[in-house]
Length: 210
Image (cartoon, rainbow, N blue to C red; front, side):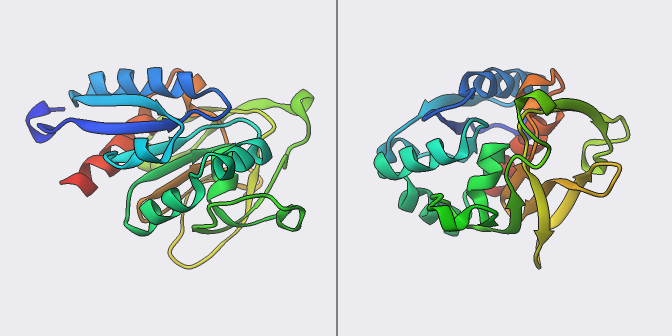
């Protein structure tokens, strides 16, 4: 891809409260290098660190822990405001849960960003022992299947108006969605070695930044 279309540095933050944020930082840099995009990818923990960002990734981990730390560090409302302003946000695994407006444990006090018009079921495929990998058809990424790793992954039980389903399992279970500038995946693209989802997110960020 010609880099002259990407002549402005993109500033991407990866929420670093808990989970494998380092893998996302490495995957982002690799994807940007392949696309010829200049980026600054950094770990973020505090509200002041999100002010000048062009996009944010919320990584996998333990959604309840990340949610509580998000509240403790004063990030919940600033992140919700950024979402309202149209900042691109990508949630992977636990991050998908945090983006959802509804989850199966909402009554247990799970802090959420509650911004994406979806209902998510946590640990939809069982415990860590039931983690698995599979090839997914993801048309927005091209014809080649995407090899996805599900580690105590959630599933999207229902989508509302404005939500595009990007990928499903063979049984129809929804595992990747997009709503405007919000992207959600139930699996871990950062460990797959396939950069195409990071390419896709960077293109969303670049299109918003103009």
